[in-house]
Length: 184
Length: 303
Image (tube, rainbow over all chains, first blue to last red; front, side, top):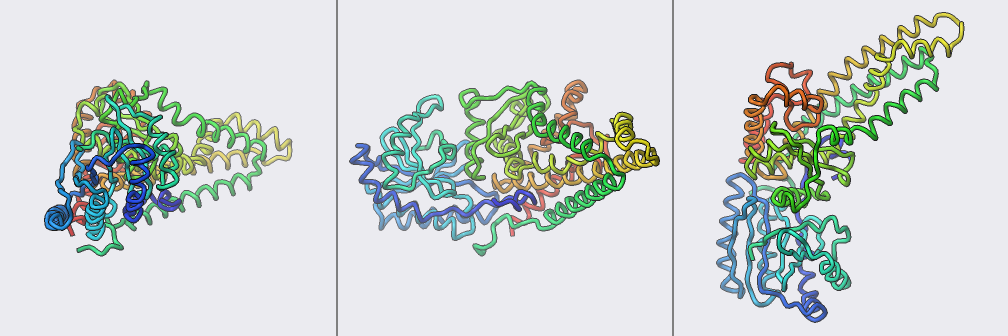
């Protein structure tokens, strides 16, 4: 969003950057050893929906393709609409590499169809916390929710410091947007 | 299949061009104003003083005053978790830091954004808005305000109205300023004519800029409506929110209305009775025009 976009009141939502997602594959070992926090086997992709027939068709196509490819990849996928009108593509699998591939495949389909701006974030579940990939900024940040919409900030800070050498961690903590109540 | 180069929401070049023309006209008007002040040999020191007073009051007081005088209270995430959740997601889509939220205790449903840059921005919603809108309509209204923040509308309108405020200051402080000018130029004569010229020029600039600034304000509203549709992906949610706000606005008491009237330029929806103002003089486009603009956007999305 540059100066002229603001001056002329143009709203443009950049297409999500999908390439950095794979960085978590190599960082997964660090997370397991340094944080002694194994991958829970659950991950999800959160999408903002668009109100037109084209988008609805893409959502259906995505389910079909994921169902088909589920036969080759040892993962299961399902989708979930949340109270705020966002759609979650949920992927379960023991190996984090398979989960990453399934998430990447989904994100790519959304992007190819021309709705890359709908990609909000991908979440990977760990013990009591999530690692969030922001498609807007191509960075990761930790999210450790506690009851009644509180965050365990000191734990998030520690996780970020530990993972900084192996992952592109979001530098601006104001962009560590909370994603409350992930459905997994 | 869409080509990946063009976003699903397309763009509105016409709106940008109309904004540009309005801003150029304002710039030309203000340049002419400065030229007249120059020709009339208004003492530089006096002019600098007036400009400093206006700049100071505009920069330091504008949005603080709005927040204080409306009796708004900041809402913490634990006080309004759902509202913060909506704002956090919108902020992530818009790629700006999540703005603070405040609540104004009035039954009139409305919302406004203040702050010169995204870091200090505050979105204020009224009690009535929270009571009447469903979550998706609330999201659309918050996205409209978020677009105002992203487009830096407080700064843009503030800048656009700067010389208009200088002109109106001159018109109002005519006798005092005229006296000072007379003192400043001594007894070289022809003073009354020059003072009269400055006063007339200020009056003309004030009147024309009033219409131009309001035109610009309406274009910024269209841009914010469009931004809301793009951020939420649902133009229909804003349309239904605007209709609900309009309906309850007509039922709002005159007392609540008067209390809010001073802040109209900031609101998502102006606190005035329908047809009490011609659209050229209004800060916001009419409901009909806003709804049909959103409908056109929805139509384009289906292609």
